[in-house]
Length: 332
Image (cartoon, rainbow, N blue to C red; front, side, top):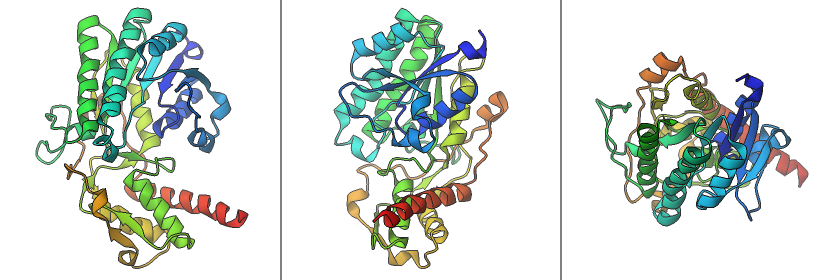
């Protein structure tokens, strides 16, 4: 099939990864469809940030509605499906355990059943997560062989989806693959996630819009990369002859405190301690203390490596938020 004829369906098109992936696929000649929920008021801000809003076609569908997902697959019969839709805020998953499970676990069952019934040649990518590892590690890192020990309703729902993806591959011969992605961020990361909360907070403090930044555990360690790099790994997974599962990360980790220090430095604010308040409300019932990827497999098999460093990532996010609020200040 010629590249121009390829079609891709991206669920979760309005989130962080969807726009970066859409941009990549459009550059490769794909026709891109983004799935948006029926009866909702879609927020196209992230797509607008990358100037993509009018370059994508939209299909109505809901991850909790089996018949709507069947309909989307039956109508489109896409070359590739990238399932990025999720209730992905870990902290909120305890309060929204039912919704988290319905969207993240059952939604995958519905999508894969739709592919099996109406478009069995479609290649399927499942957005899995390093949160599935929880407390588990292999000599201080996590790779494809590290056992799962999920510590939140979000992580539990993702473990279910991970095995469902493998089960459809083994049971029905579908091309299904899991990308076990470690934390990846960008200027369009949701404001409730700690990295964007930090960059947003620094910008507000710098411009006199806020006095303090309220955070939870500063000692938690994460393997942080740039979302724009990680979508390339997603794409590469679906271009292989055989489906497989891959860990994607940078191989280095940093504390939340390191992220905070850098962000304040790039915001031109000395003495970050004056502005940061530890708020017990933001501590999780069950914490995952340290995640660090060993991504040898994705490097060897797919030739993928992260391009954006931790420093560059923090700098880009802070600068983007300063620019956003700078515009707001001027328009007042």
